[in-house]
Image (cartoon, rainbow, N blue to C red; front, side, top):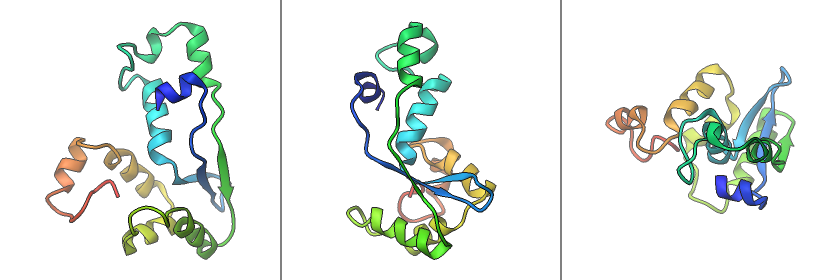
Length: 136
């Protein structure tokens, strides 16, 4: 992901959902967004360099990288239909994933933050209580 950004190559379109309070939720593109944010935050290195060890021009290149974002607006059922459409090519969505697409709020945002990383502590704990991947 970071290599793609540094080379200036395009990433796939990300889909965001605009909420009633004019805030945004990720509908699709969570891994891409988190990867970039976590690198900038210093959570991991790339090519043996952390973000804060880069020269200012390289940091500016990363921070100035333009993401392709499509903002989905409408009723909850319209947003759910968007979610179904953009996820049609991959693995079949579970009923819970479809419900998650229409629910927004601080609890879900916080859960996604903790459970969206492979082999993180929260994911390891959850794996004893859920079938399938806790990330999904």
